[in-house]
Length: 572
Image (cartoon, rainbow, N blue to C red; front, side, top):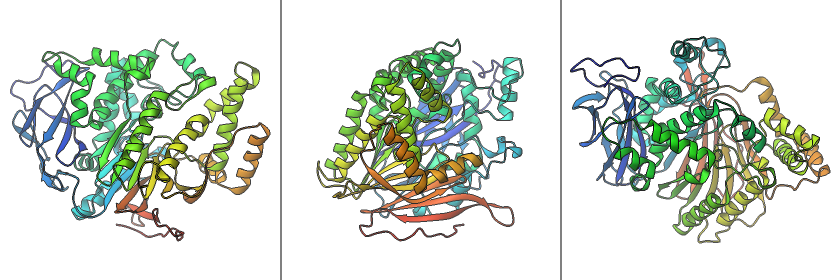
Protein backbone atom coordinates (compact mmCIF):
# COMPACT_ATOMS: atom_id res chain seq x y z
CA UNK A 1 0.00 0.00 0.00
CA UNK A 2 1.27 3.48 -0.78
CA UNK A 3 0.32 7.09 -1.23
CA UNK A 4 -2.34 8.05 -3.76
CA UNK A 5 0.45 8.96 -6.18
CA UNK A 6 1.77 5.40 -6.02
CA UNK A 7 4.93 6.16 -4.02
CA UNK A 8 5.75 3.50 -1.39
CA UNK A 9 5.45 4.41 2.27
CA UNK A 10 8.50 4.19 4.53
CA UNK A 11 8.23 1.26 6.92
CA UNK A 12 7.29 2.27 10.47
CA UNK A 13 6.35 5.81 9.46
CA UNK A 14 3.61 7.47 11.55
CA UNK A 15 0.38 8.12 9.62
CA UNK A 16 -0.27 11.76 8.80
CA UNK A 17 -3.50 13.71 9.12
CA UNK A 18 -3.98 15.39 5.73
CA UNK A 19 -7.31 17.15 6.28
CA UNK A 20 -9.34 17.58 9.43
CA UNK A 21 -10.50 16.77 11.90
CA UNK A 22 -13.93 18.14 10.95
CA UNK A 23 -16.57 18.03 13.67
CA UNK A 24 -19.79 17.37 11.76
CA UNK A 25 -23.11 16.09 13.11
CA UNK A 26 -23.58 16.76 16.84
CA UNK A 27 -26.71 15.97 18.85
CA UNK A 28 -27.25 15.79 22.64
CA UNK A 29 -25.60 12.36 22.99
CA UNK A 30 -23.40 11.78 19.91
CA UNK A 31 -21.09 13.37 17.36
CA UNK A 32 -19.25 12.45 14.17
CA UNK A 33 -15.64 13.41 13.38
CA UNK A 34 -14.29 13.19 9.82
CA UNK A 35 -10.63 12.93 8.76
CA UNK A 36 -8.47 12.27 5.71
CA UNK A 37 -5.16 10.47 6.30
CA UNK A 38 -2.18 9.65 4.09
CA UNK A 39 -2.51 5.87 4.43
CA UNK A 40 -4.68 3.09 5.89
CA UNK A 41 -4.76 3.30 9.68
CA UNK A 42 -6.92 3.10 12.77
CA UNK A 43 -8.43 6.44 13.81
CA UNK A 44 -9.18 7.00 17.50
CA UNK A 45 -11.36 9.81 18.90
CA UNK A 46 -12.20 9.63 22.61
CA UNK A 47 -11.57 5.88 22.63
CA UNK A 48 -13.86 5.18 19.67
CA UNK A 49 -11.84 3.56 16.89
CA UNK A 50 -12.49 2.86 13.20
CA UNK A 51 -10.39 1.77 10.26
CA UNK A 52 -10.07 4.15 7.34
CA UNK A 53 -11.82 3.41 4.06
CA UNK A 54 -10.23 3.99 0.67
CA UNK A 55 -11.61 6.03 -2.23
CA UNK A 56 -9.61 6.99 -5.29
CA UNK A 57 -6.40 5.99 -3.53
CA UNK A 58 -7.15 8.36 -0.62
CA UNK A 59 -7.97 7.32 2.94
CA UNK A 60 -10.83 8.62 5.08
CA UNK A 61 -12.62 7.87 8.30
CA UNK A 62 -15.84 8.98 9.94
CA UNK A 63 -15.72 8.31 13.67
CA UNK A 64 -19.07 8.10 15.47
CA UNK A 65 -18.71 9.17 19.10
CA UNK A 66 -21.69 8.08 21.20
CA UNK A 67 -22.45 8.18 24.91
CA UNK A 68 -21.95 11.92 25.34
CA UNK A 69 -23.89 13.94 27.93
CA UNK A 70 -26.42 16.59 26.86
CA UNK A 71 -25.11 20.11 27.40
CA UNK A 72 -21.54 18.89 27.91
CA UNK A 73 -18.16 20.09 26.66
CA UNK A 74 -15.60 17.38 25.87
CA UNK A 75 -12.09 18.22 24.59
CA UNK A 76 -10.82 15.57 22.19
CA UNK A 77 -7.68 14.38 20.45
CA UNK A 78 -7.21 12.43 17.23
CA UNK A 79 -4.87 9.43 17.23
CA UNK A 80 -3.73 7.50 14.16
CA UNK A 81 -2.46 3.99 14.95
CA UNK A 82 -2.14 5.15 18.55
CA UNK A 83 -0.03 8.26 17.82
CA UNK A 84 -1.54 11.65 18.64
CA UNK A 85 -1.73 13.85 15.56
CA UNK A 86 -4.29 16.43 16.74
CA UNK A 87 -4.10 19.00 18.28
CA UNK A 88 -0.85 19.93 16.63
CA UNK A 89 2.08 20.72 18.87
CA UNK A 90 2.37 24.40 19.81
CA UNK A 91 -1.06 25.19 18.39
CA UNK A 92 -2.08 28.79 19.24
CA UNK A 93 -5.76 27.83 19.28
CA UNK A 94 -7.90 26.51 22.15
CA UNK A 95 -8.34 22.77 22.44
CA UNK A 96 -10.78 21.25 19.95
CA UNK A 97 -13.91 20.11 21.74
CA UNK A 98 -17.35 18.61 21.24
CA UNK A 99 -20.12 20.74 22.75
CA UNK A 100 -23.48 18.99 22.76
CA UNK A 101 -26.82 20.85 22.65
CA UNK A 102 -28.58 21.52 25.92
CA UNK A 103 -26.39 24.24 27.41
CA UNK A 104 -28.13 27.34 28.82
CA UNK A 105 -28.02 30.63 26.93
CA UNK A 106 -28.63 31.65 23.32
CA UNK A 107 -28.00 29.37 20.37
CA UNK A 108 -25.57 30.97 17.92
CA UNK A 109 -25.47 29.86 14.30
CA UNK A 110 -22.81 31.15 11.90
CA UNK A 111 -23.45 30.89 8.17
CA UNK A 112 -22.23 31.93 4.75
CA UNK A 113 -21.26 30.62 1.33
CA UNK A 114 -18.84 30.91 -1.58
CA UNK A 115 -15.26 30.35 -0.42
CA UNK A 116 -12.76 30.44 -3.25
CA UNK A 117 -9.86 28.55 -1.66
CA UNK A 118 -7.75 29.61 1.30
CA UNK A 119 -6.03 33.03 1.27
CA UNK A 120 -2.53 31.54 1.14
CA UNK A 121 -3.32 29.89 -2.22
CA UNK A 122 -4.82 32.93 -3.94
CA UNK A 123 -2.69 35.39 -5.92
CA UNK A 124 -2.64 38.90 -4.44
CA UNK A 125 -3.24 40.43 -7.86
CA UNK A 126 -6.71 38.86 -7.91
CA UNK A 127 -7.73 41.60 -5.47
CA UNK A 128 -9.94 39.41 -3.28
CA UNK A 129 -10.67 41.02 0.12
CA UNK A 130 -9.60 39.31 3.37
CA UNK A 131 -11.11 35.87 4.04
CA UNK A 132 -14.08 36.40 6.36
CA UNK A 133 -14.03 32.78 7.58
CA UNK A 134 -10.37 33.03 8.61
CA UNK A 135 -11.02 36.33 10.40
CA UNK A 136 -14.13 34.88 12.04
CA UNK A 137 -12.15 31.86 13.29
CA UNK A 138 -9.55 34.19 14.82
CA UNK A 139 -12.32 36.15 16.55
CA UNK A 140 -14.03 33.02 17.88
CA UNK A 141 -10.74 31.68 19.25
CA UNK A 142 -10.30 34.90 21.25
CA UNK A 143 -13.77 34.74 22.85
CA UNK A 144 -14.88 32.86 25.95
CA UNK A 145 -16.45 29.52 25.03
CA UNK A 146 -19.97 30.60 25.95
CA UNK A 147 -19.85 33.13 23.09
CA UNK A 148 -18.70 30.64 20.45
CA UNK A 149 -21.15 29.68 17.73
CA UNK A 150 -22.96 26.40 18.33
CA UNK A 151 -23.16 25.54 14.63
CA UNK A 152 -21.69 26.54 11.29
CA UNK A 153 -23.83 26.30 8.14
CA UNK A 154 -21.97 26.45 4.81
CA UNK A 155 -24.46 27.15 2.04
CA UNK A 156 -22.64 26.15 -1.10
CA UNK A 157 -19.52 26.65 -3.21
CA UNK A 158 -17.21 25.27 -0.55
CA UNK A 159 -14.84 24.61 -3.48
CA UNK A 160 -14.68 26.00 -7.01
CA UNK A 161 -14.19 23.29 -9.61
CA UNK A 162 -14.46 25.77 -12.48
CA UNK A 163 -12.38 28.67 -11.15
CA UNK A 164 -8.93 27.40 -10.25
CA UNK A 165 -6.07 29.10 -8.45
CA UNK A 166 -2.70 29.41 -10.15
CA UNK A 167 -1.24 26.86 -7.73
CA UNK A 168 -3.91 24.29 -8.60
CA UNK A 169 -3.51 24.86 -12.33
CA UNK A 170 0.22 24.25 -11.90
CA UNK A 171 -0.49 21.04 -9.95
CA UNK A 172 -2.95 19.88 -12.60
CA UNK A 173 -0.43 20.64 -15.33
CA UNK A 174 2.12 18.37 -13.68
CA UNK A 175 -0.49 15.64 -13.24
CA UNK A 176 -1.79 15.89 -16.81
CA UNK A 177 1.58 16.47 -18.44
CA UNK A 178 0.42 19.63 -20.20
CA UNK A 179 -0.21 23.27 -19.26
CA UNK A 180 -3.68 24.06 -17.90
CA UNK A 181 -5.19 27.31 -19.26
CA UNK A 182 -6.62 30.02 -17.04
CA UNK A 183 -10.14 28.77 -17.69
CA UNK A 184 -9.17 25.15 -16.97
CA UNK A 185 -11.41 23.04 -14.74
CA UNK A 186 -11.21 19.86 -12.70
CA UNK A 187 -11.89 16.57 -14.43
CA UNK A 188 -12.23 13.75 -11.90
CA UNK A 189 -12.24 12.62 -8.25
CA UNK A 190 -8.48 12.92 -7.79
CA UNK A 191 -8.47 16.52 -8.96
CA UNK A 192 -11.36 17.34 -6.62
CA UNK A 193 -9.32 16.12 -3.65
CA UNK A 194 -6.83 18.89 -4.42
CA UNK A 195 -9.59 21.52 -4.12
CA UNK A 196 -10.65 20.36 -0.66
CA UNK A 197 -7.06 20.25 0.58
CA UNK A 198 -6.55 23.76 -0.78
CA UNK A 199 -9.68 25.10 0.94
CA UNK A 200 -9.66 23.43 4.34
CA UNK A 201 -6.03 23.38 5.46
CA UNK A 202 -5.35 26.97 6.50
CA UNK A 203 -4.81 26.88 10.30
CA UNK A 204 -7.68 29.18 11.31
CA UNK A 205 -10.38 27.37 9.35
CA UNK A 206 -8.95 23.98 10.22
CA UNK A 207 -9.34 24.78 13.93
CA UNK A 208 -12.81 26.25 13.43
CA UNK A 209 -14.02 23.15 11.59
CA UNK A 210 -12.56 20.92 14.30
CA UNK A 211 -14.56 22.65 17.03
CA UNK A 212 -17.80 24.05 15.56
CA UNK A 213 -20.22 21.43 14.15
CA UNK A 214 -20.71 22.08 10.44
CA UNK A 215 -23.63 21.47 8.08
CA UNK A 216 -22.99 21.79 4.34
CA UNK A 217 -24.76 21.76 1.00
CA UNK A 218 -23.49 22.17 -2.55
CA UNK A 219 -24.17 24.87 -5.10
CA UNK A 220 -23.17 25.02 -8.75
CA UNK A 221 -19.43 25.68 -8.48
CA UNK A 222 -18.82 22.40 -6.67
CA UNK A 223 -19.70 20.88 -10.06
CA UNK A 224 -19.77 23.56 -12.77
CA UNK A 225 -21.19 27.05 -13.24
CA UNK A 226 -24.88 26.99 -14.22
CA UNK A 227 -25.26 23.38 -13.04
CA UNK A 228 -28.80 22.27 -13.93
CA UNK A 229 -29.92 25.72 -15.03
CA UNK A 230 -32.32 24.34 -17.64
CA UNK A 231 -33.23 21.45 -19.89
CA UNK A 232 -31.34 23.09 -22.76
CA UNK A 233 -28.20 23.42 -20.64
CA UNK A 234 -28.46 19.80 -19.59
CA UNK A 235 -29.01 18.49 -23.12
CA UNK A 236 -25.84 20.27 -24.20
CA UNK A 237 -23.57 19.24 -21.35
CA UNK A 238 -24.61 15.59 -21.07
CA UNK A 239 -23.67 14.90 -24.70
CA UNK A 240 -20.02 15.87 -24.13
CA UNK A 241 -17.30 13.26 -23.68
CA UNK A 242 -16.19 14.78 -20.33
CA UNK A 243 -19.43 15.17 -18.37
CA UNK A 244 -19.63 11.69 -16.83
CA UNK A 245 -16.12 11.96 -15.34
CA UNK A 246 -16.81 15.49 -14.13
CA UNK A 247 -20.15 14.84 -12.41
CA UNK A 248 -18.97 11.50 -11.04
CA UNK A 249 -15.91 13.13 -9.50
CA UNK A 250 -17.91 16.09 -8.21
CA UNK A 251 -20.74 14.14 -6.58
CA UNK A 252 -18.51 11.33 -5.29
CA UNK A 253 -16.12 13.81 -3.67
CA UNK A 254 -19.06 15.79 -2.27
CA UNK A 255 -20.41 12.57 -0.76
CA UNK A 256 -17.05 11.84 0.89
CA UNK A 257 -16.01 15.33 2.00
CA UNK A 258 -19.37 16.96 2.76
CA UNK A 259 -22.46 14.73 2.67
CA UNK A 260 -21.29 11.97 5.04
CA UNK A 261 -20.91 14.47 7.85
CA UNK A 262 -24.42 15.82 7.30
CA UNK A 263 -25.92 12.51 8.42
CA UNK A 264 -26.79 11.47 11.97
CA UNK A 265 -25.62 8.09 13.32
CA UNK A 266 -29.13 6.70 12.70
CA UNK A 267 -29.11 8.00 9.11
CA UNK A 268 -25.65 6.54 8.53
CA UNK A 269 -26.95 3.17 9.66
CA UNK A 270 -29.73 3.41 7.05
CA UNK A 271 -27.59 4.84 4.24
CA UNK A 272 -27.12 2.15 1.59
CA UNK A 273 -24.00 3.70 0.06
CA UNK A 274 -22.26 4.13 3.41
CA UNK A 275 -23.06 0.58 4.41
CA UNK A 276 -21.79 -0.71 1.06
CA UNK A 277 -18.53 1.21 1.52
CA UNK A 278 -18.10 -0.21 5.01
CA UNK A 279 -18.75 -3.72 3.73
CA UNK A 280 -15.90 -3.61 1.20
CA UNK A 281 -12.91 -5.86 1.97
CA UNK A 282 -10.07 -4.01 3.69
CA UNK A 283 -7.92 -2.28 1.10
CA UNK A 284 -10.60 -2.31 -1.58
CA UNK A 285 -11.20 1.04 -3.26
CA UNK A 286 -14.70 2.52 -3.00
CA UNK A 287 -14.34 4.85 -5.97
CA UNK A 288 -16.10 2.53 -8.49
CA UNK A 289 -19.03 2.17 -6.09
CA UNK A 290 -19.16 5.92 -5.49
CA UNK A 291 -18.90 6.63 -9.21
CA UNK A 292 -21.91 4.39 -9.84
CA UNK A 293 -23.84 6.19 -7.06
CA UNK A 294 -22.92 9.60 -8.48
CA UNK A 295 -23.88 8.80 -12.08
CA UNK A 296 -27.19 7.32 -10.92
CA UNK A 297 -27.88 10.44 -8.83
CA UNK A 298 -27.16 12.68 -11.81
CA UNK A 299 -29.48 10.75 -14.11
CA UNK A 300 -32.24 10.03 -11.59
CA UNK A 301 -32.37 12.36 -8.55
CA UNK A 302 -34.73 9.95 -6.75
CA UNK A 303 -31.79 7.62 -6.08
CA UNK A 304 -30.15 9.97 -3.54
CA UNK A 305 -31.65 12.55 -1.18
CA UNK A 306 -29.08 15.24 -0.49
CA UNK A 307 -31.51 17.25 1.67
CA UNK A 308 -31.43 16.64 5.43
CA UNK A 309 -32.54 17.94 8.84
CA UNK A 310 -30.65 19.25 11.88
CA UNK A 311 -32.34 19.21 15.30
CA UNK A 312 -31.10 21.98 17.62
CA UNK A 313 -33.56 22.05 20.50
CA UNK A 314 -35.75 25.13 19.98
CA UNK A 315 -34.40 25.50 16.43
CA UNK A 316 -34.76 23.18 13.46
CA UNK A 317 -32.73 23.40 10.24
CA UNK A 318 -34.17 21.89 7.07
CA UNK A 319 -31.46 21.90 4.40
CA UNK A 320 -32.96 21.72 0.91
CA UNK A 321 -31.02 20.59 -2.16
CA UNK A 322 -31.80 23.26 -4.75
CA UNK A 323 -29.40 21.98 -7.44
CA UNK A 324 -29.27 18.22 -8.02
CA UNK A 325 -32.98 17.42 -7.63
CA UNK A 326 -34.42 19.89 -10.14
CA UNK A 327 -37.06 19.03 -12.74
CA UNK A 328 -35.92 20.86 -15.87
CA UNK A 329 -38.48 20.20 -18.62
CA UNK A 330 -39.76 23.65 -19.60
CA UNK A 331 -43.44 22.80 -19.24
CA UNK A 332 -43.00 21.46 -15.71
CA UNK A 333 -39.96 23.18 -14.20
CA UNK A 334 -39.49 22.56 -10.48
CA UNK A 335 -36.66 23.52 -8.13
CA UNK A 336 -37.39 20.30 -6.21
CA UNK A 337 -39.41 17.38 -7.56
CA UNK A 338 -42.84 16.63 -6.09
CA UNK A 339 -41.69 13.65 -4.03
CA UNK A 340 -38.92 15.59 -2.31
CA UNK A 341 -41.06 18.70 -1.90
CA UNK A 342 -43.66 16.59 -0.08
CA UNK A 343 -40.85 15.45 2.22
CA UNK A 344 -39.84 19.10 2.80
CA UNK A 345 -43.42 20.01 3.69
CA UNK A 346 -43.68 17.04 6.04
CA UNK A 347 -40.49 18.13 7.82
CA UNK A 348 -41.87 21.66 8.23
CA UNK A 349 -45.11 20.33 9.71
CA UNK A 350 -43.17 18.06 12.04
CA UNK A 351 -41.09 21.00 13.27
CA UNK A 352 -44.26 22.94 14.14
CA UNK A 353 -45.80 19.91 15.83
CA UNK A 354 -42.60 19.53 17.86
CA UNK A 355 -43.01 23.11 19.05
CA UNK A 356 -39.76 24.64 17.74
CA UNK A 357 -39.37 28.38 18.23
CA UNK A 358 -37.39 28.92 15.02
CA UNK A 359 -37.73 27.08 11.72
CA UNK A 360 -34.69 27.52 9.48
CA UNK A 361 -34.72 26.54 5.81
CA UNK A 362 -31.30 26.32 4.22
CA UNK A 363 -31.06 26.59 0.43
CA UNK A 364 -27.97 27.68 -1.46
CA UNK A 365 -30.07 29.96 -3.69
CA UNK A 366 -32.09 32.85 -2.24
CA UNK A 367 -35.89 32.55 -2.20
CA UNK A 368 -36.54 36.31 -1.93
CA UNK A 369 -34.35 38.34 -4.30
CA UNK A 370 -34.10 42.06 -5.02
CA UNK A 371 -37.48 42.88 -6.56
CA UNK A 372 -36.25 43.88 -10.00
CA UNK A 373 -34.19 40.70 -10.36
CA UNK A 374 -37.12 38.60 -9.18
CA UNK A 375 -39.32 40.16 -11.89
CA UNK A 376 -36.72 39.58 -14.63
CA UNK A 377 -36.33 35.91 -13.63
CA UNK A 378 -40.11 35.39 -13.75
CA UNK A 379 -40.36 37.20 -17.08
CA UNK A 380 -37.55 35.14 -18.59
CA UNK A 381 -39.06 31.85 -17.39
CA UNK A 382 -42.47 32.79 -18.78
CA UNK A 383 -40.98 33.53 -22.22
CA UNK A 384 -38.88 30.36 -22.25
CA UNK A 385 -41.89 28.22 -21.35
CA UNK A 386 -44.44 30.00 -23.54
CA UNK A 387 -42.20 30.07 -26.63
CA UNK A 388 -40.23 26.84 -26.15
CA UNK A 389 -38.52 25.79 -29.37
CA UNK A 390 -39.17 29.11 -31.10
CA UNK A 391 -36.95 32.14 -31.60
CA UNK A 392 -38.16 34.06 -28.54
CA UNK A 393 -37.85 30.99 -26.35
CA UNK A 394 -34.28 30.39 -27.51
CA UNK A 395 -33.42 34.04 -26.79
CA UNK A 396 -34.88 33.72 -23.28
CA UNK A 397 -32.76 30.60 -22.75
CA UNK A 398 -29.59 32.42 -23.82
CA UNK A 399 -30.36 35.25 -21.40
CA UNK A 400 -31.13 32.75 -18.63
CA UNK A 401 -27.70 31.15 -18.94
CA UNK A 402 -25.75 34.36 -19.56
CA UNK A 403 -27.28 36.23 -16.59
CA UNK A 404 -27.61 33.26 -14.17
CA UNK A 405 -31.41 33.61 -13.99
CA UNK A 406 -31.88 30.38 -12.05
CA UNK A 407 -32.97 31.19 -8.50
CA UNK A 408 -36.30 30.27 -6.92
CA UNK A 409 -37.99 33.07 -8.85
CA UNK A 410 -36.98 31.33 -12.08
CA UNK A 411 -38.89 28.27 -10.90
CA UNK A 412 -42.14 30.11 -10.22
CA UNK A 413 -44.24 27.12 -9.19
CA UNK A 414 -41.62 26.06 -6.64
CA UNK A 415 -41.28 29.64 -5.33
CA UNK A 416 -45.01 29.68 -4.63
CA UNK A 417 -45.02 26.21 -3.09
CA UNK A 418 -42.21 27.10 -0.70
CA UNK A 419 -44.01 30.31 0.14
CA UNK A 420 -47.25 28.43 0.85
CA UNK A 421 -45.41 26.03 3.16
CA UNK A 422 -43.73 28.88 5.05
CA UNK A 423 -47.01 30.79 5.39
CA UNK A 424 -48.70 27.65 6.71
CA UNK A 425 -46.00 27.45 9.38
CA UNK A 426 -46.27 31.17 10.14
CA UNK A 427 -50.04 30.93 10.59
CA UNK A 428 -49.67 28.06 13.04
CA UNK A 429 -51.81 25.73 10.95
CA UNK A 430 -50.13 22.64 12.41
CA UNK A 431 -49.67 23.81 15.99
CA UNK A 432 -48.21 26.82 17.73
CA UNK A 433 -46.42 28.98 15.19
CA UNK A 434 -42.70 29.48 15.74
CA UNK A 435 -41.41 33.00 16.38
CA UNK A 436 -39.56 33.02 13.08
CA UNK A 437 -39.40 31.11 9.82
CA UNK A 438 -36.07 32.02 8.24
CA UNK A 439 -34.66 31.10 4.83
CA UNK A 440 -30.83 31.06 4.88
CA UNK A 441 -29.05 31.40 1.54
CA UNK A 442 -25.87 32.51 -0.24
CA UNK A 443 -24.72 32.48 -3.89
CA UNK A 444 -25.27 36.12 -4.92
CA UNK A 445 -22.04 37.68 -3.53
CA UNK A 446 -23.67 40.21 -1.26
CA UNK A 447 -25.66 40.18 1.97
CA UNK A 448 -29.13 41.43 2.78
CA UNK A 449 -32.18 40.77 4.93
CA UNK A 450 -35.74 40.77 3.64
CA UNK A 451 -39.10 40.11 5.31
CA UNK A 452 -42.48 38.96 4.02
CA UNK A 453 -45.00 41.79 4.49
CA UNK A 454 -48.04 40.34 2.68
CA UNK A 455 -50.22 38.42 3.20
CA UNK A 456 -50.74 39.59 6.75
CA UNK A 457 -52.21 37.83 9.74
CA UNK A 458 -49.09 35.79 10.42
CA UNK A 459 -48.14 34.66 13.92
CA UNK A 460 -44.47 34.23 12.93
CA UNK A 461 -42.17 36.57 11.05
CA UNK A 462 -40.86 35.18 7.76
CA UNK A 463 -37.39 36.31 6.67
CA UNK A 464 -34.82 35.79 3.95
CA UNK A 465 -31.21 36.14 5.17
CA UNK A 466 -28.54 36.00 2.48
CA UNK A 467 -24.80 36.04 3.20
CA UNK A 468 -22.16 35.66 0.50
CA UNK A 469 -19.24 35.42 -0.12
CA UNK A 470 -16.95 34.12 2.62
CA UNK A 471 -13.87 34.54 0.41
CA UNK A 472 -14.47 35.84 -3.09
CA UNK A 473 -15.49 39.15 -4.60
CA UNK A 474 -18.35 40.86 -6.39
CA UNK A 475 -17.12 42.73 -9.49
CA UNK A 476 -18.25 46.34 -9.76
CA UNK A 477 -20.99 45.64 -12.36
CA UNK A 478 -22.48 43.02 -10.01
CA UNK A 479 -22.52 45.49 -7.14
CA UNK A 480 -24.21 48.12 -9.28
CA UNK A 481 -26.74 45.59 -10.53
CA UNK A 482 -27.78 44.44 -7.08
CA UNK A 483 -28.01 47.99 -5.75
CA UNK A 484 -30.25 48.89 -8.66
CA UNK A 485 -32.20 45.67 -8.16
CA UNK A 486 -33.49 46.92 -4.81
CA UNK A 487 -34.41 50.40 -6.07
CA UNK A 488 -38.03 51.52 -6.41
CA UNK A 489 -37.68 52.74 -9.99
CA UNK A 490 -36.10 49.44 -11.11
CA UNK A 491 -38.90 47.53 -9.40
CA UNK A 492 -41.53 49.61 -11.19
CA UNK A 493 -39.77 49.25 -14.54
CA UNK A 494 -39.22 45.48 -14.41
CA UNK A 495 -42.65 44.97 -12.90
CA UNK A 496 -44.18 46.74 -15.89
CA UNK A 497 -42.22 44.51 -18.28
CA UNK A 498 -43.45 41.42 -16.44
CA UNK A 499 -47.07 42.59 -16.47
CA UNK A 500 -46.89 43.39 -20.17
CA UNK A 501 -45.82 39.82 -20.78
CA UNK A 502 -48.71 38.56 -18.60
CA UNK A 503 -46.33 37.06 -16.03
CA UNK A 504 -47.98 35.79 -12.89
CA UNK A 505 -46.73 37.85 -9.91
CA UNK A 506 -45.15 36.35 -6.82
CA UNK A 507 -47.51 34.86 -4.26
CA UNK A 508 -46.01 36.94 -1.43
CA UNK A 509 -44.74 40.49 -1.07
CA UNK A 510 -41.57 41.36 0.78
CA UNK A 511 -39.54 44.36 1.85
CA UNK A 512 -35.81 44.81 2.26
CA UNK A 513 -34.95 45.04 5.96
CA UNK A 514 -31.21 45.70 5.55
CA UNK A 515 -28.55 45.81 2.86
CA UNK A 516 -27.18 45.26 0.37
CA UNK A 517 -23.76 44.81 1.98
CA UNK A 518 -20.67 43.92 -0.06
CA UNK A 519 -17.35 42.40 0.91
CA UNK A 520 -16.40 39.05 2.40
CA UNK A 521 -18.75 38.30 5.28
CA UNK A 522 -20.07 35.87 7.87
CA UNK A 523 -23.61 35.99 9.23
CA UNK A 524 -24.66 35.07 12.74
CA UNK A 525 -28.17 34.13 13.78
CA UNK A 526 -28.56 34.48 17.55
CA UNK A 527 -31.61 32.62 18.92
CA UNK A 528 -32.64 33.12 22.54
CA UNK A 529 -36.03 31.66 23.46
CA UNK A 530 -38.43 33.23 20.99
CA UNK A 531 -36.12 36.15 20.28
CA UNK A 532 -33.86 36.23 17.23
CA UNK A 533 -31.19 38.58 15.90
CA UNK A 534 -29.22 38.69 12.68
CA UNK A 535 -25.63 39.91 13.08
CA UNK A 536 -23.41 40.50 10.05
CA UNK A 537 -19.61 40.72 10.11
CA UNK A 538 -17.67 41.98 7.08
CA UNK A 539 -13.93 41.40 6.76
CA UNK A 540 -11.77 44.49 6.34
CA UNK A 541 -8.33 45.88 7.10
CA UNK A 542 -7.55 48.04 10.12
CA UNK A 543 -5.44 51.16 9.49
CA UNK A 544 -2.35 49.15 10.47
CA UNK A 545 -3.15 46.55 7.78
CA UNK A 546 -4.29 43.83 10.16
CA UNK A 547 -7.31 41.83 8.99
CA UNK A 548 -10.42 42.10 11.15
CA UNK A 549 -14.16 41.59 11.22
CA UNK A 550 -16.33 44.66 11.34
CA UNK A 551 -19.84 44.24 12.70
CA UNK A 552 -22.05 46.22 10.33
CA UNK A 553 -25.50 44.99 11.28
CA UNK A 554 -27.42 43.91 14.37
CA UNK A 555 -31.05 43.41 13.35
CA UNK A 556 -33.88 42.10 15.57
CA UNK A 557 -35.91 39.45 13.73
CA UNK A 558 -38.54 38.28 16.20
CA UNK A 559 -39.55 41.57 17.87
CA UNK A 560 -43.29 42.00 17.18
CA UNK A 561 -42.98 45.80 17.09
CA UNK A 562 -41.38 47.64 14.16
CA UNK A 563 -37.62 47.28 14.26
CA UNK A 564 -35.20 50.15 14.61
CA UNK A 565 -32.72 51.04 11.92
CA UNK A 566 -29.68 48.72 11.75
CA UNK A 567 -26.92 49.63 14.17
CA UNK A 568 -23.26 49.67 13.31
CA UNK A 569 -20.29 48.93 15.44
CA UNK A 570 -16.94 47.15 15.47
CA UNK A 571 -15.98 43.86 17.06
CA UNK A 572 -12.45 42.80 17.65
